[in-house]
Image (cartoon, rainbow, N blue to C red):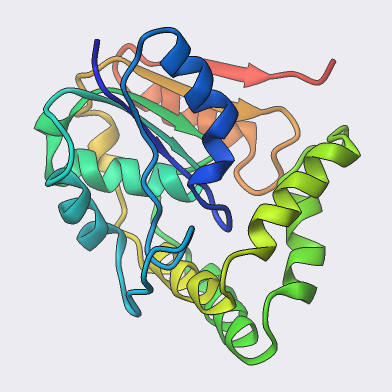
Length: 215
């Protein structure tokens, strides 16, 4: 079986995937859950970029891995596919997008990074965590994601915010993807809504789109 690579979202660390990784390992898969710079106890790398992290990650992966990227992890997954296509044997893109940051979004992310460096993460997380989850998210889920996020240094969040802001545009890459691809989105995703994923899946030859509905 192919190694499964789970790339975590912002502002979580690799422990976000603990339940998923355990289930995959029970099913017989080899699983790796790397931390992005500054998260999960990994040393900070001020100024890191998605492209640079993709090059580093490629050196740790076997060819033909099953790469799963959620949100920020999806940006990294596309950067990995763009620079090292031999490392990606199948792909899952969840709650993410292929386009680069829009000019107004870039300004907003720069402001967010400045606030995180100046004021820390507590107030930021009060607003971010509920917005990142659907309206029906249970209190236990909200608390768990808040707890994981609160463990991460504000500087790591600021650096990651800028790595997201300066990511490359991979929209033209989509039509050249030849590996099996699943595009996943929650129906209430307000950050990267279903319309974005519908368009993305349509651009990838043979891709499957899955919209997760509320019960």
